[in-house]
Length: 411
Image (tube, rainbow, N blue to C red; front, side):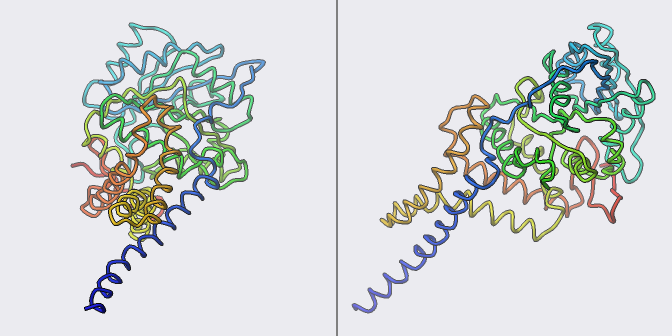
C-alpha cells in the first residue's frame, strides 16, 4: 500500500517538476528580453532632433490607394493641408478601385485646396509585382518626371497627418542624416477588440524589430512602418526601389532592408502626430489584418512556423499556466516562478498601453492576446496552403515560385 501511494505521489510530482523547469526557462527568456532585446519595451523612441535646412528640399507624397473611399475624406485633406515651407506635391495612385476613390480624391482637392494633387492609375500589376508596390512605382515615376524631388514620402491612404508632419519629418531627416525616417502611425483603439489586440500588435513588432537596433548604421536589424516612410530619392534609387522588392508582401520591412543593404541608414519610431483612421471594430477584421501576412513574415517556412508557435507558448502561455497550476497544486516554487515571468511580461507591456492611453489592467491579459496571435499565424499558414495566402482587397499573393516572381490571382 505504501509503495502504491508513493508511486502515485511520484507520478503526480513529475509533471509539476517538468513544468517548473519549463517555467524557469520562460522566466530566463523574459529576463533576457527585458535586458538584451534592444529595450524594445520602451516607447520613448520618437523623431530624432530636427534641423532647419537652409533651403527646404522638394518632396513628393506618394499615396497608393485601392478602394479607400471610406477613409479618404479624413486622410487626404490632412496631406493637402501640410504646412511645408518648400515645394511639395501629392500623387495619389488609384490602384484599380471600384468605389470611386480617384474621383473622390479629385473632388476633395477641388473642395479643400492646399498642396497640388495628381491622381493617376497604373493599371493592373504585371506578373512579379504586388499591387501596392506597382502603384508606388507608378507614383514615384510620375513624381520624378514632374519635379525630380529630393525626398519621397510614402504614406498609406488610411493615414492622417497633422499639419506640421511633413515639415517635422524632413527636419528630422536633415538633422540626423538618415536616408529613411519612418514613423509607426498610432492605430485606432476604440472598441474592446482593438484595445486588446492593437497595442499588442505594435508591442510584438517592436520586440521583433527593436527600434534602437534599427537606427544602428552597421546593424543588421532593419524595418520601417509602411504608413509613413520618408526616404531620400537618391537612397531609393541606389537601393533599386521599388523594383528590387517588387514581390514583397511585407513591403515596409523589405524597403528598409534594401536601403540598409545598399549602405543607407534607417530610423523608425513611434508617431505622435500621425494616425491611422482605418477602423477594425470586430475580431474578424483584426484577424484578417494579421493573418494575411503572418506566414509570409515566416518566409512560408513550416519549421519557422513551428518554432514561432512553440516560442509563443513558452514565452507567453507558460507563465500564467505555471502560476495558476502551482497555486492550485500547492507547489509554491512553481507558482512563484510563473508569477515572476508573468509580472515581467506585464511590466514590459505597460509602456505600450500608456502610449495608447489604455488601462494598465490589460497588461496581465497579454498571454490571451498572444494566444490569439498564435492562432492567427497558424491560420495564415493554413490559408496559404489552401491557395489563399496574402489576400488583400481582391488580390492573393502566393509564395514566389522563384526569386523575383510573385503570383497574383483574382478570386
